[in-house]
Image (cartoon, rainbow, N blue to C red; front, side, top):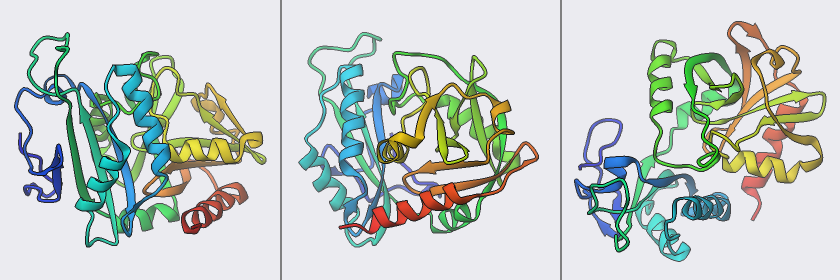
Length: 281
């Protein structure tokens, strides 16, 4: 399999098991079954933002899927290799169970596959996001699966379908419900509703991905943050709504399905906190 970037060109900034290569085996379980995990890491001047948070999420995913967590020092060295010469980059880290077994039940002696790839920093998309986004609720639903809730596994067809659904609304963000009509997230970021100075974010115990920035907000503002089952009608009652992810940061939501919203003091506070956190030694 050839790994390609968004422009369709073969990648050169890619390591497979530590070797410069754009190829993995055709019978790799990531390709056959989506049997693995991934992390999207923002890297600035060779330093990954919130590295330990990413590693903690990866380790938890490994525990749930029965994978061996790679050495952090090896991953960090490889990330610095693929981002050498770049001031900012996005790194995608893929950990597959490996190749060799065509049955659902994996073999006991498979060697895991580790893929580290660097992508350009989406500067224009980040800039636009800081100004705020319009959103709409997707028809595509996320399945409820408690065994996979919260982890960043490779089975992302629901997000692919949602992204295709939003292709005709490219200036808007897609919000996703689960099969029980609970809001879970946006397609590639987490969701936060603000009520006064309190923040509510969807629980991720049955579906969705526990984002690294979301986790930071929950820890840093523990007394003001609550994990809840959130429904669409709660958006109309919220004083503010914002999205969060490690690349675009805190993104104000200006409307949802035509309902107008206004960025407020809590969203601004989170943006300031994030900027200060990123600049902190």
